Amino acid sequence: MSRILLVDDDAALCDLIAQRLARRGLEVVHRSAPLEALELLTHGDFDVVVTDVNMPGMNGIALCERISTNHPDLPVIVITAFGDLSTAIAAIRVGAHDFLNKPFEIEELLLRLDRACRHRALRAEVQRLREVVAGSDASAELLGESAAMRKLRDLLARIASAEAPVLITGETGTGKELVARHLHARSRRREAPFVVVDCGAIPHALLESELFGHVRGAFTDARVDRRGLFLEADGGTLFLDEIGELPLELQPKLLRVLQERVVRPVGSNAQQAFDVRMIAATNRDLPAMVDEGRFRQDLFFRLEVLHVALPPLRSRGQDVLPLAQHFLSHFAARSGRPVKGLSGPVAERLVAYAWPGNVRELQNCIERAVAVADYADLVVDDLPERIRSYRSDDVIVSTRDPAELVPVEEVERRYILKVLEAVGGRKTDAARILGLDRKTLYRKLERYAARERDADPEPR
Image (cartoon, rainbow, N blue to C red; front, side, top):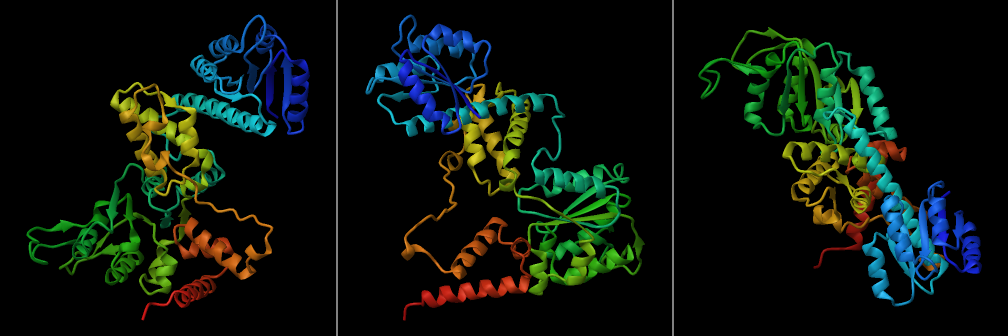
C-alpha cells in the first residue's frame, strides 16, 4: 500500500481527499502546517508528498525545495491555482515531480500519484542496481533474476560437466555463444580449446574443408595440408553456430563424424580420431526443417541429446534494468566517460520496449547512449529514436456491442498468430505453448492462409 503525505491548511478538504483515496487502497496522512510535515518526514516513510502552495508560515514552493534537498528520492506533487503557469514553473525548478491545477478531479490526482509512485520505485531500483553491479564481477555471465533465467542457470549447472552433445536454440541476440562458452568454462575441458564455427558465414564449398581438413592437392589452391577444426578443437569443445545453415549434402558427413569420432580430411584415405564435446546452436526451427526435408532427422536427434532453449528478453522483463546497468558500467569504464546510471524516464522506456533484437540490441542501445550522454544519468534523448517513440502493439479488445464480438474460431486464429509472433515464427515452440502437435498447427496455418487468399483474390 502506497503512503501519501498531504499538506494543506484546509483540514476539511484534506479529510475528503483522504477518504476518497483510502477507497482506492492508498494510505493518506495529512498535516495542515508545512513545518509539521517536515518533522513527520524525519520519522515516517512516505511514497509521495502532495502539497498546496498557499499556506501560512511557509508556502508549498519552499516546502518542496526543503523536501527535494533533504529527501531527493521523494517525489512532490504541487497543487497550483488554475492557469498559474509561473507557480508551476517555480515548483519544477525547485525539484517538484509534478503539479496539478485547481480545481481537479480525484481521478486526475490518482493518475499523478500512480505515476509518482512508479517513478520513485524505478529510482530505487536503479540505485539498487548500481550497488549490485558495483559489487559484482564486471564480466558476470547470464545476469538476471527472472524465473526464466533462474531455470536456465539451474539447467546449465546440471549439464556443464556432461559429455553429451548440446543443442542451444533461441532468437538472434539471446546469447547462444555466451551460453556455449559458459558450458565449456565449467566443464572438465575448460583448459582445452573452445573452437567456434559459424556455419552461415563460411561458403558452402569451403565448409567441409574447414571442418574436416584437407590434404595438399585435394582441390585447386590446396597447396599444403590443413587440419580441420574438429582436430583443432581436440580435447576441448567445438561450437557449431547457426547449424540450421549447414548444407543438406554435408549433413550425412557430419553425422558419420559424430557417430564414429573420426575425421577423414578431404582428399585423404586416412582417418584421424578426435575427442571433442559438440555444442550446436541455431535460431531456426529445426523440427520444422526436418518435416520440410531441409534437415536430416537422424542428425537432429544426434545433436539434441541435451537441449537448452534460451528465453527472449521480452519474456524476462525484470532482467532488463540489471542488464542495462551492467552494460552501462562496462561501457562507461571502457570509454572513460563519467556516466553512472539510468534516470527514471530512461528506465521506464527500457522496460516498456519489446527488444526484438534481445540482449544484443539492449547492449548496443546502452553503448550508444553512453557514447552520447552529457549527464551522470542517461536521459531519454540519449536513447535511439525507435526506443524513445516506442508504443506497444498489444491489442486488448473490450466491447459490449454484440456486433463487434467474433466467433470462437476467430479468437483462436488471432491467439495462434499472436503466439507464433511471440516466439519469432518458430512453429515447434508455438505448438508446444498451444498444446498442439506440429501437424495440427500446420493445418490450421494453411487454412488461415487459404482464407486470406480467398478473401483477397488477385485482380483479373
